[in-house]
Image (tube, rainbow, N blue to C red):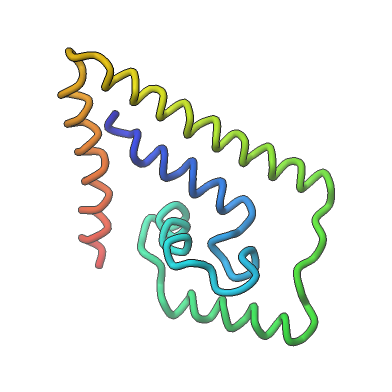
Length: 131
């Protein structure tokens, strides 16, 4: 239960990052800030650098103006990406089912809740310590 919050974050953000939805290239423009944050935490374990985010968006906009739009994916690459997303979703479902099992028993409910809360709070504390 302690690792469940971060495992869920990694499973979900990994699925988004498979198609680069946290980057201007994958989103097709400026991605939502929440995806940028989640991607930076997953990839760098730090909040995103606003200057770097702006540089990526400007670089992508310039490549679009120059005619360098998104390229078609190879079928095998696309299938592999879809498989990775399915693995991420399967992992997320497995984690949630484990959490349901932990919370279902009266004996383990309180320790599970405490471990989950600690596992959710610790990353936030560590991120805040970096800023």
